[in-house]
Image (cartoon, rainbow, N blue to C red; front, side):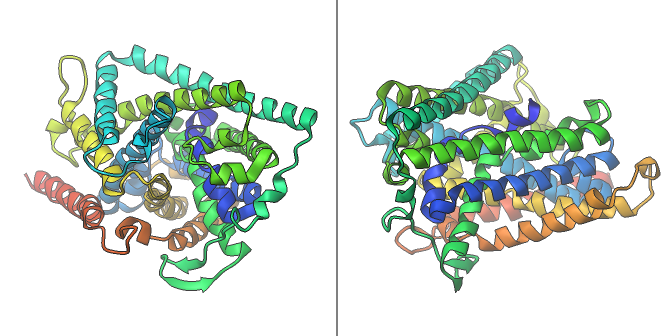
Length: 456
């Protein structure tokens, strides 16, 4: 249940359009490949948790394997990624809310900095702050509501869609191959070095897009310390969670494509999955469920992301004042830093949902590449309690090597021009500055602070 709740979120409601456009009739395969990669990576994280007897986190694993020099960078970038992920979730919720609430307006598609969308975005951040002030009860309520909403919406979509297929016999799966629908992008290293064009290249890029629907799997093993026999139960629970979620995703996408691939791709709706349904009440139910799901996940992200910063503060990597709480128990400085990053990236990319989803996936590849390497190192050493851990060639060698290989392959396949360039082809200096500050300047400051504190 923890795994399922960690994975299912906004992704499956929003990504089908982009995935079908890139992969065409092979879109379900893209979700299968993304789920396979997610399962391998989740098992790698669980495998690392067997050697580090603390709550699983990429910072803990890399620090145990390579020391603070690498651990600090991974920890700081993990905090930044958590902030970016929250910003992506918040921007997608705001876009969906405006599109659903004010369908006659174009506020949801506005990309200007001074706009109703930006004002709503800021207001939503304030609402999340207020919810955090009310404490854990509000957080628990939002998480529970989110779970019910997401599961109910997907169940209604699949069951209702299958009912429409059985009773009305539509078969629009073939529209996925139509010229205006199926548009496989050219495969290029880093988006600039052209190599190939065709079904395979489109499937690779579609898999990257589909991977966003599985993000969250990296947190399944984070509470391994509190689990009963995690070295035995996690390797069983994680594949089951990934398999269950993957089956639901493939079924949902297949139903959507049978109802109308062209509708999903050509729709301007934020909740692309619902675009395949012509039935009013059924479509409204799916959209409402997606909104509830996105709202609840934003509440959880607004609670969890600042705590990543305070965890680094508690270990003296960052200044202690980041952990300072107000009288309501909210770490306001950490919340402000997280909220600033959550606002900055969507504004820098002008709320482009496709590029934001891509950024949210690519930003995680620092962890996806380093953690498997850390597991290889942990499995080879006998320090601490590691001699008592039973070695497993599959989880300690084969899966980490496969994870690094696939992670690097996906990372070099991403079109980074969508982040560093404007739609007109010029340099996006705002986005470039943010990337330099967050991935170079902030970690450098963390290093200086940590070693200066150690010298004292």
